[in-house]
Length: 347
Ligand SMILES: *Cc1c(COP(=O)(O)O)cnc(C)c1O
Ligand code: SF4
Image (cartoon, rainbow, N blue to C red):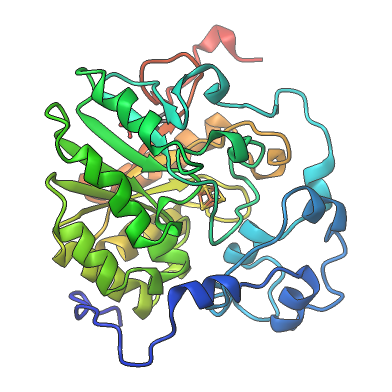
């Protein structure tokens, strides 16, 4: 039974510090498989793929995987496999045109009114399908001594009314670093909203501690937190508590998911994701068609199936539990809703 109104979180005395849990993440594929009773049972495990983009997964997230199941939907998201190394036409290093949309150090301007700030390149978990797996973070994060430049870019453009903290995962920064960023933004008169794109409340819910919630409560703008969960099984009572804490601090909670073959590409899984999120106080926002990033082709779901799955959700869920099915197209003014291909353009 899922508690409809999880109790607010107060970290218990002696609760593990999130930074320690962060450092303690599983990084060795062999250890991960051993923890799941899968040693020697995943023949397509790839050391070379792990060398390109290392495995990283917090132990609390591993605990939500089903032992003995090599097809577990959480495991599939993090396991480095041979398929990543097969070159695929159409899958490239900068799939979403971020390289062309830079407005200044660590700031990406693609859409009207919104500036996306790459607060950090770090993530607590490494998702194999991630569109930023090849992004040159080391040079590009606003955190690398470049707060001032990013803030000046935002201050100098009165058309920006919303700042999105993104990354990487912006909540991987210590709370005092976040405050160093939002402090100088507080007196920018044209800013009206703050958004935080983060997977941490799901993959390392301990990050949502009393200090983070105090920072959130003190922000001068309405805050939207867009979490990222792809499967209902990613939620557990610790995640519920973290999300309840964020809501109590005044944040509006939305979820974005990526449609992933072998993870969530069936109507039951997608409906369960929306329903489980709702039980935790989160509404679905986007269901993304995969960005065509090199190494992720084996996760792709074709458009016709994606549209059929979306239609199945429309038929069975209340409208507010149906995410928008979109794709990011370089140069477009917004995420593009998927639509049925014109009859004569079918191959
Ligand atoms: C996705 C994205 C946004 C946010 O788009 P919304 O449709 O407002 O959620 C903003 N900037 C960049 C660069 C993005 O990729
Ligand atoms: S940016 Fe998001 S999707 Fe990419 S690795 Fe980090 S948490 Fe995963």
